[in-house]
Image: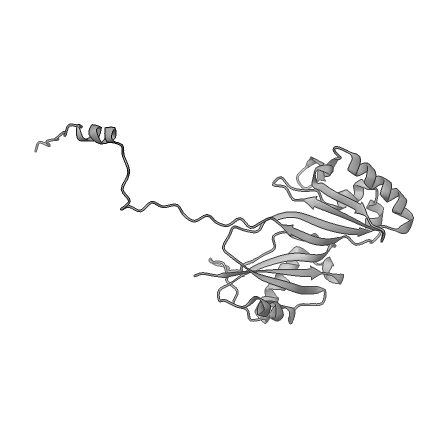
Length: 251
């Protein structure tokens, strides 16, 4: 059965940023039921709504332009999807954009942008730290994984394509999402000497999720069985001269 894909943009603010990604998924599922939208479901013993978040938002981080995609089993105009979900959304969850998606592969995230407030008395030191970070060819960082008993070594500079402290004392930076992963926002904050500001309660905000250009599914390549196969004259002559062999089976 053909389905309709819809992409929504939403913000996750206030106390809702303290909910986990799993809880957010359950919240969206309840919203879909209350909005009475014809959501497509997976097959199997425990069918679930076809809802996809291309990139989960970590606990405690606010989001301004997050992405949610869902599949509908019946056509519904996008503005109605947006209105019906917005009417049942909890405080802190704001939906503000919807678009219908054509056929294609799953959505890929190209980059993410963050904002982080810096105390005024730390602005000069932050400017210096940003300048040193941008001037470096590489910024090695060790990511400890106690759960797996190993340490990953990554280059933060490779992923951070833009870092700047604005006149409003807000640090803004952009991180590439590569096939082998990315840097974490708290790692960049730490590299600039601001970990203590984060642990004392400052809020990280993901201001945008940039999506890669759509990659449509190529049409299947099939050859009609009635289409003649072109052969040259020498090949035709060789085929005509092949002797015919008869096999006799004795009984």
